[in-house]
Image: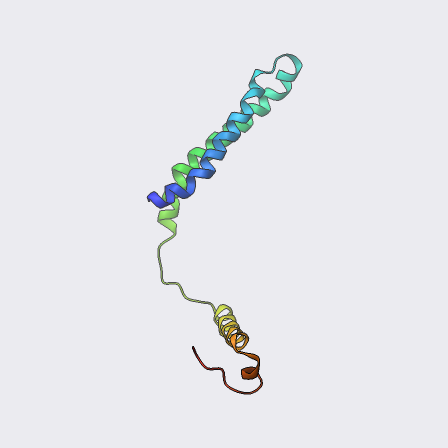
Length: 106
C-alpha cells in the first residue's frame, strides 16, 4: 500500500497545484468576473471531485476488480520472444562464428 501511495503522490501534488493556479480567476471582478467565475467554479469542482475519486473510490474498485492471477505470454509474444532471443544470440557471436561455425556459450 505504501508503494502505491508513493506512486500517486506526484500526480496528486500536480493536481493540487493546478487547482491553486486557477484560484486567481476567483478574484476577477466586473465583466471578466461574470465571464470567468463559472468556468473557475467548474474547473475547481471537477479537479476536486477527480482528486477525491482518485484517492477513495478508484483504489477500492481496483482492489475488487483486478484480482492477482498467473501471468503468461500470448502466442504472439511467445513467438516474438523466441525469434528475438535467436536474433540476439546470432548478433552476439563474432563474425567468424556467423560464417557457419557455431557460437560458443561464454
